[in-house]
Image (cartoon, rainbow, N blue to C red; front, side, top):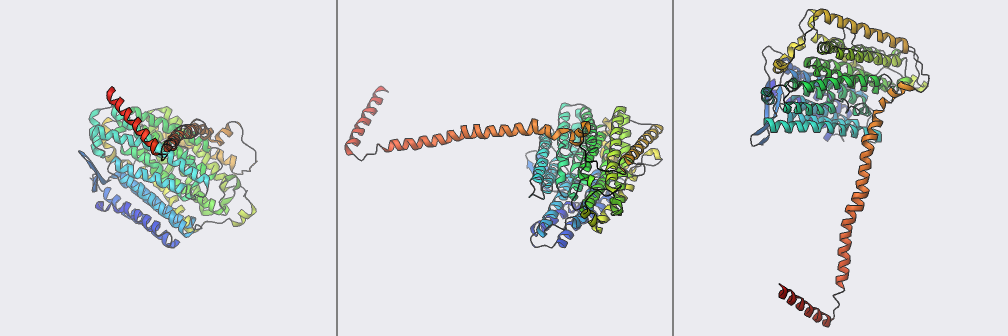
Length: 632
């Protein structure tokens, strides 16, 4: 099956072409079948590839399709690398992607035929780009997919392009990602000049002899991290992600759960050798990841838009993944990527089900009591909340516990701060759940009259994701439970090359049990606190004051960016437009034109038509030539 790996990205690309070119005459049912079927077929092939990769003794294989760039000694093939890491990401992307496509067939059904087909074409192109990113056998291939998901995010966030604010959100995402992408691009140029290659094994083989803290490796690692900060929404390049909620809800699920935002995690995990050789940059990654986790969690505490709470939750969870990468726990980061894909897709699709039932309303203060109207959405959403909060037995517990344990082994301060973020997560997620699903309904009578459970194309993906959110974590059971960590064992060959340079941190089983017990007890306490505070929530209609207002306004970071970056750039642009271009360049160019025109008008007067004047001019000319010749 490995040789057929090219079919995995090709099928979504085919779906994009069919739906994109046939958008004016294909029916919605056919469009949905083509779009969903293409990704489902990719999932089936990915599953077969995964089973091949999982066999004992499997070594990474590269499938080369053709030479992409060949200049002198530099050869960059268009090739796919199939190993444990790429096979796992293929399953997550195509599996969750299939459920989101099926969900979309119902959620987007009110769109016109052409708009519906355009949506599915973009969605297929998005999946294709992400598959190229994780399958690429070199950094240039990864960059092609990297740019592809950036383009598709712009198209999907601004899908309803008649709304100016949605267009602004799409542009914001595009521009902020370009900042990070520049770092990634410069890193690729560094690799070419220093190593003469961008193929993963060759780069790592040439980097290893340079040793720890080499300036070249440090620079490359930092530049790659700048790219990851943009794509995976870390401080300071995170503000685009909450605004990405402007797109349709299934798009939010796709961007935030299984695809785009995990690209940075994948890139650093793939480049584990470089980061292990650059421990200073690992520290930077851990600190920025932890700061992002805490900062975004604090903002989520006071958001009232159901999708904004989940958006800041995503930024916070990505911070945890970077914390894991920063302490060298690459497997734990990938584990959390997987579990997060399940419960965050579930939560976003669940919020879409709520918004669908509420006629487009997203303010949780105008909801309440929805569990009696939407039982399936209620129970599946609750499972998602339990998973993300890290309740024992749910998938999020195992992956988050592993990250916190590795953080403690590295530095107990990182553990304490990480635990604080986890407690905030439990609180704001159950604040969201209780305000939305319990108490009395606070919307209009018209909304209450139309409340109903969503149709099966929406609820079936929710139920599947709920099952995965419960049992998905059991593939990574820690050894303290007396069993092998299957996921860590599976991923071991990918991270083995960095093992000789890594500093091993081990915890005793007693310490692990203690950490698990403390975190679980505190999480449950914070959930009960949220229940007491919000189970019978009534909107008082009062404005927030003090620190609560700061959190509600997201620490005023967008306003700060507007003040120190956007407005000065606009003023600089206005200065160049009015002063440099209009008063300078335009006046110079127009002045030359007017000078030529005026000169022509004056010289034309010499053409009088009088023969005597012409003879006189000829004599004067001869005298001038004679004088010049005499003087020279």
